[in-house]
Image (tube, rainbow, N blue to C red; front, side):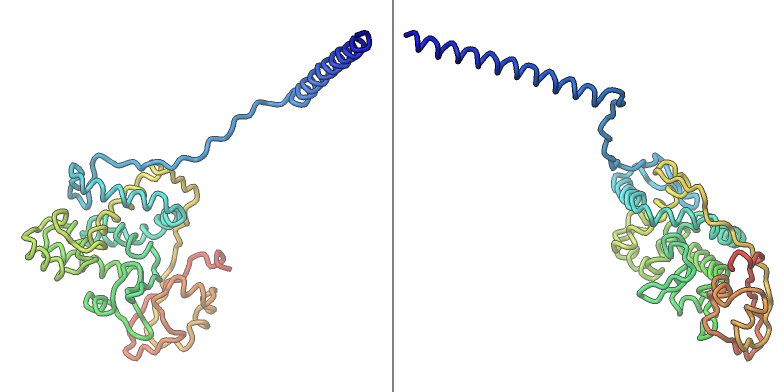
Length: 314
């Protein structure tokens, strides 16, 4: 029994020693953690970005005509295009940066022709304000004219000159088209839709469906979305702050002077150098010149745009 008591005594002593060691080890670890974190600021876990729904206006007009936003289908269609263009960030930022430059040319032409200012947004969705845009269907320029339609509305289109690429002249041609469409439909909204679908197609569907209001017509997906795309870009470009866009440095307006050409031009590169610019810069301001030379057998007068500040392009 004495031997067993000694063994039990030793076990109790070793257990006590282990408890004391564990206590001091725990205390040391807590002290070390406190020292390591002393003086550090408390940081919160960053909140992940939240993708939210878009702001939908309670009322809108297009070219002075009321958009029927009391209708569920109209609200949903507009919201769809607002979402697409709000979250297509790089695309919409480029539009917002380029718009002041292009609108400075488009707006006075539309105003002179009596076309509502809202039609500048039609050019936005047609070409993203790119005068050199070419669609898979071979529609060309800022207003995306097909060759036959462009000629019908007064544009010169041949191997040397293609005025579909001419910002001013193509805008004038688009204004003529839109005025003619309005004379037929008595509605700017329907006139805009006809720019996409064609007047004949719209008239056919109106007859079949016994409807004249664009918002009541069942049309192909592209034409049904067309007006709402215009409305969405109008809303975002007019109120970019509501859609979290902040463009601090838009593209500057480029001032030009006009040089008249009434005969042939043997070499546009030499012509450009003679006016202190490169051939590349000449084509930047005159993309409607399609060849490196100009025959001009009828001695037609062409107005060539030359930048007022050529040093900006060297």
